[in-house]
Length: 115
Length: 115
Image (cartoon, chains in turn yellow, brown):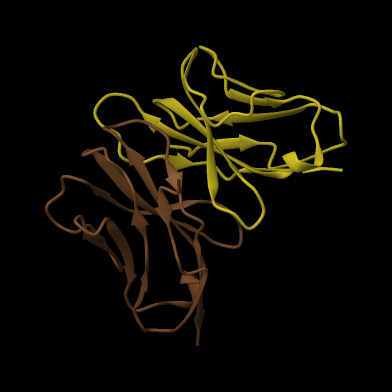
């Protein structure tokens, strides 16, 4: 059973470009979470999605950031018009549906560098 | 307000010794979960141990144990018989409420195990 997959692992963008980060949850998992880790800091929650629904986006910046988890395909975190402050590691985690799911399984992260 | 506090930015521990990593939390929700994750220099997030707020016994997983003191709102991680491979950043996290929902992370503690 493959773990949570994220791609790309490293992404370099120039200021003003768009960044698209992909996350494929573990098989059978329908809950996806995105977190951001700035250098030398802990992870900060961004958004929680289930298939085709955003459940909690309280951690998402109001502008330039969006996320989706379509019925088919991976979850996408999209950052428009990137700025240097967006440079960070972006982690996706997934958990199964059904009974109380205690653990979130993390992907390896995407390291975004904005030049 | 900070929900998870890890007061130790870094620690040195000798191989084979035990080490305790401090974590205090703040919540008014009677139902919550506490997690510890390890982040080695390679960057991935590795789940170590989980404690539910209603669990009567302290959680243990191999060399990891969680010293859960509910009245003090503390959830310290104890690593017994430290190994060189334990050198990493360790994060405490909390999920408020039952089942699914975002994790809130502390700032982390850097552990260095010396021979």
